[in-house]
Image (cartoon, rainbow over all chains, first blue to last red; front, top):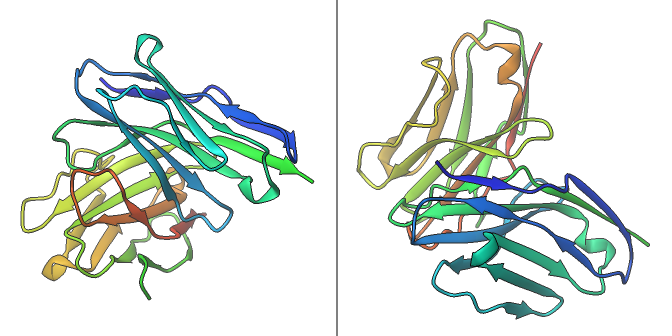
Length: 115
Length: 114
């Protein structure tokens, strides 16, 4: 069975602070994919990143960075110098290989960035 | 519009009534998904359509739930004899490539069953 756990249900930071959103996953597959999606107040989920299980290189995209640690089954997401516009619910998700795009989502972390 | 369109955006119904939720995917996207997001919960997979293949219905919670996709485009999710626990936001997503994991989501249909 697959499972994604986002232990932080809600995080509140002040603008310009760095914040890390945790994601821990469980799978018996050797090949799998991990994702982060952002859900702003409008409700529409927006794709942020995909990472496959063979690529443990960390990735940076502007103020966003992702740390994939296979040894601890974690795929954490860090926002540097947070901004009010980063306020949203962030979902981590897992997909099995050859499973189409059926994703198993975590419960989400609500991030509130205060000015 | 260019994105995934869902209607209605809000639906309030009485327990026992049937409801239909509609999803218009991005043109050219062959895959379509329905997810359910209950208050404070993550997204729960419901059903997946890929091209002309038989849909994967493994996530439907009961036989009161059904979905169809006509002409490989618009999809309708039907909930019969609604119950209060069906209250949730129903999200539709589509994708062009079934393997990238990049789903394009609509804004959802919020269903409230009184």
